[in-house]
Length: 316
Ligand code: PMV
Image (cartoon, rainbow, N blue to C red; front, side, top):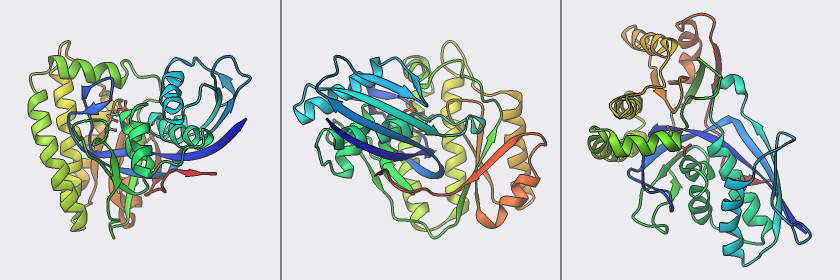
């Protein structure tokens, strides 16, 4: 029996990933840039056990279906040259009240724990390629702070790496609009956007340029540029989704209400920018000195969690 436990933090994309060019290899159409978050993470223990007759998976103490996990573990078994099944136990420290998806932290933690338990000593780049096979956003969660996922052209060239740390005291406020399950998962909706949205080609062209512009804005510590690029990448992703067939949006009335509040904050001189993912919740990017003022300017009655840059995935 060989066992390992890993912790990985979730991340929020400043420049979004939306759409796969190759669904089997999980190669994206565009590069993306993200901030790994301090307060939200997944702990996963993997034990390969020659006596098991199938993989087992427990999340927060409850037994779960293993189809996706087993497909992922098959990649690890192929790399390590083993046939042993595994026991996987995960605990999510992503409060449901935050309304954040946990697939990024989940597959980054699984990639590190499973590869270590299988006796592999993968480089961060190889780990990020492995995590990519579980969930695109997990590619970036191998790294702490700011990361870029280079879209690449094949399995070897599509990986994430850490970007130089900014001197800006970045803060992310997660505004919970609805903690319920989303009406359509990101995997299915992404595929439909690629297949049917007339705006998708424009999204690819603009978002790729935006990823490169974001790298420069971060290096220059230019917060208003970073914020503008962040809000625009999200808006353009949601515009492509809205224009797909059948037309669809994750937005709820409170999503728009919060976004309008953020626009009003900027008019009042507060540096705050909104970004939304595959769900109705809003994340607000700001700087440490403005957190209290941003919170005070939000519509009343919503749960807000404030967090900052978090660390890379690591073995516990
Ligand atoms: O890899 P997934 O299925 O978690 O998709 C992530 C998609 C977005 O969160 C909307 C954007 C992103 O880059 O994280």
